[in-house]
Length: 207
View 1 (cartoon, rainbow, N blue to C red):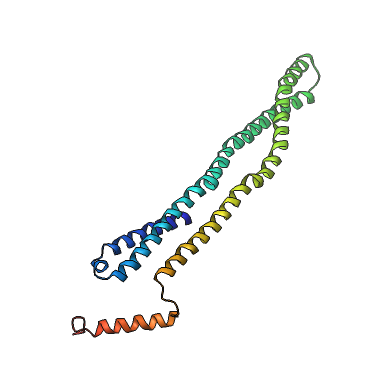
View 2: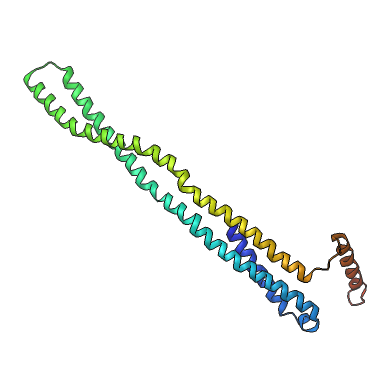
């Protein structure tokens, strides 16, 4: 979301600089045209770099996250299959125990034998599924760090490169249009003075 916000901001900045270039004042004041041209160039550089950054993060962070998330349905299905097998195992085990508690008559022994035969493959299936989850779930849990580490490293590098590039872009812009030696307070006083001159004009004077 942050990266899309930056991209939207840079697109808006490019629109502003383009509008300024089409302002008639640029034709009348070469110095103003020079400043606006420098600003427009900087905004286009920023926009281009923002787009590159968004594409890079999409490839190195967003897509790996999506791929990792795609594993969960299969993992959840394996857990559900294990749970279903456990329920079958408990049901047949209960059936065996019921016959074991009865008097050992011929019919009961036959049913006990049949129940044990039904239980055996279900028990083996459950034990196999349970063993697999017990072995692989810890591996899955611990491997997530190794999986995400490159993505986070790429994200940090992208941020470092981004702010380094932004510093360069606006540093270059400042060198082109800034008047060295003026403090922020001096600039503010100068702006207030210019605004006062404008307000003093008869065409904008209060009625």
